[in-house]
Length: 167
Image (cartoon, rainbow, N blue to C red; front, side):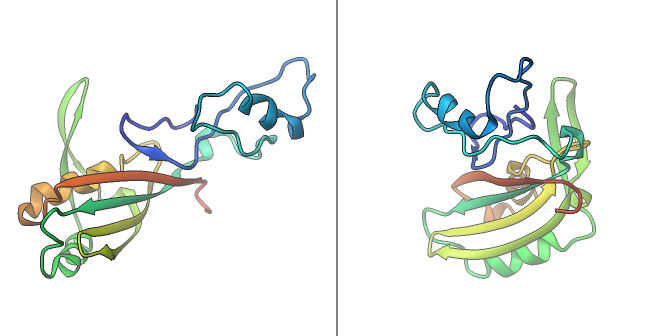
């Protein structure tokens, strides 16, 4: 599976890259054959010869939903827009090699903020997918670090698409 997600994230766009060595399966019939044996909730939508190599898939589109039990704080949308417009947004990235400070701003290519309802805001974003990649959940971590009064009570992350540099 190309560009696997961390545990707890939802995806509407996963890419499974594999080869059929003997050529015995028609690509048009492959989704039905795979869907017959996949677990509930996982389904293959399409099978095709790739026009791109995995290393060319450099961007991802994601939705980060910020949930506030007591309602979205007043002026939160405006404050978040100002925050994400900064020249630099530094987080602490945890890895097997230890903690490291990382400026995520260069890894954010687009970001918009919309009110979903009185308790939720949604960040729609296009982020770097690899080399280096940006976990969309780090956007919420940045909010918690720099704007603690706007820390959401719960965060949902959904990847919706994967792109090459040209989109």
